[in-house]
Length: 548
Image (cartoon, rainbow, N blue to C red; front, side, top):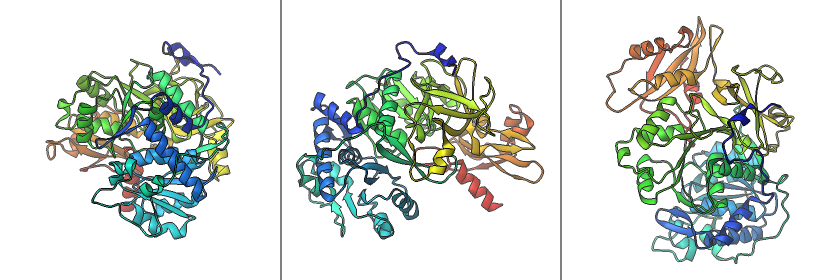
């Protein structure tokens, strides 16, 4: 196929790469071998070196093997961001297991589904989350529960010398620190075929809303990490990366955690995103790269202490997960002097398919295809006809980072993967030079009197209003038009009671075609979000439908 994006190709970036055909955990071994005394993780002031991280994960692998975990078994991680997550991830891989990262915000029903669907027999969790596991373990195939505590991140993790406050004991659960302290670093030997063997079973709702386990191989993950690092010009052992995006999520897991470990960077690890903690950590630890999502940048821009933050150490800011409003991009550059590198992809692509070249910033532009990656725009009806430049359709992609398929779901795999192409469910278009523009999710389209309205376009217009901090637009039933757009709006501090619904509708009327104008506005103190920071339009839609 034609690749017009090659005309825009960044200097120094190869169009094709020879990717290491090794297991993901071997990248940790390599980092520890080359930089044993280098700090790998900083968490709440506590440091772990690469040699210590490698040894701790080896000891955990040895223990898991002794418990009966063998190649291909699923080990679930039901953990917040913590050193234990990273140790457990690499330790379970070194035992030959497939990782099942579970959202630590899950309740019983959600966790039970993923454990049952994956047939996980082992889970590593925390004292805070253990009660959820305990209530559903009898309804799953779980045989082993290993429990840790955030208190273990202090010296007990490395010394097994506990302070006055002993780790909480749970009946029939294995204590994480006691467990790894019993074993020498002697992990089992087994063969891995990187292109065929699954490393991670990462669950996603995708286009159907049914949680599906994406089978990501060792090769998928490493290819994604290597192509991103080369594109961004990132340097081995020289970067300082801050991770607050959830590591159970593919972006936090692959692009942040695995990339950092594989390149021997220092990881400044935060349990979750809190704007004040991020500002303090930037000032103290001087990160060189910064990964966020649009809601992160919006929250930081609206924080009262943001002007006290020294961004001079950061040379690259990345955003993904959802499209970045142009107004936020402009405000961020004005404040920090830093451009935002944007990307687009999905869990099924480990997750990256495109990235923006340096200095190319346009509304809704999310990038050009990465090395060894192809993207097309096809018709939404059959998915077989490639559309001309400028015409909206479904974005599809293929490359070495595309998943093997969905776990135990052959029909869904056949629907999503066709001749090596992943059908993303995202709507966009490509210009004549191969730039990819994201418009919206296929399932979020609002149909007004036969016209299609894309929520992101309306949201982008509303974000230009100085009073608006965040906005989500959905379609609600309309007896005459079929649907009409409704906006849920969070106002910036000081604007409450000073901006009316009529004023915002008029603001839209002056900037949008008549059928795109919002006809309802609802003010909220906050909008529902996923733990990855995405605004959940579907939650607002479900709420609106219940109200009738």
